[in-house]
Image: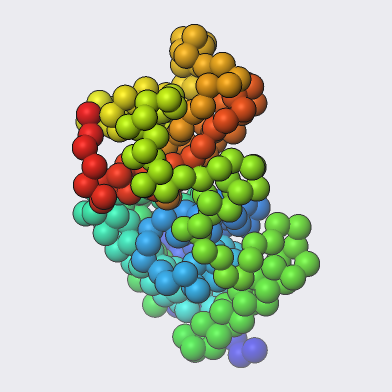
Length: 145
Length: 159
């Protein structure tokens, strides 16, 4: 692996690390309940009624592992950070649109954001939180330049 | 010092392949596996069959309501019940069902037939309530799975 000198302002370097670690933490916290209760998560995915039947369980199975892989890349593989951050941003955009659609439809379904736990509804708070995470991802992307 | 970054596509490939491998591994050898494809809309029906609870359709539910022999229980929240319910139904919200059962105990007996419903096929509460009532000793509990949405679609009157 070739090494290139990192000439960035140390502040940006620190910011990149903090943002990536924070995002990795959130991703892992989001993924673990989905992995330990895949049936509950599959139900939550189904209730959005946005995917054809064929894809619901596939998404329920693979999405949390995508979150884990991105988290691992963010923490352990700085060379892959930009790519991982772009995937995270893409996921957040898709989730935010899905939740917005649920809010527009007036459905009362669990978010599924941190597993299929019933207590967290897909609503304004999840939207706000996603926007915050998107901003953090954008910041991290900016700092990797 | 930083190692030269991978191209975006290389990092995407790496992350996606890892995710696919891990996910597949979890499904093949993991302790919590789910079917690759599942029809979630039938989930209530399948669980009812497994619990030995008889399911009734809209037509039969209408007969039951008209004859008045069954005790009809609405498993939805009280606000939903107040907004409109099946004629003659009693509010029996699933979350507070234990207290509600104590209050309504006089209405139940092992022989008293009961019909339970909630909002529709996606709602689990009626099924859970039906199982609860069975556990309390009711011998004839039926589930009107299509619930409020099925009743409304058929254009039947509400209270």
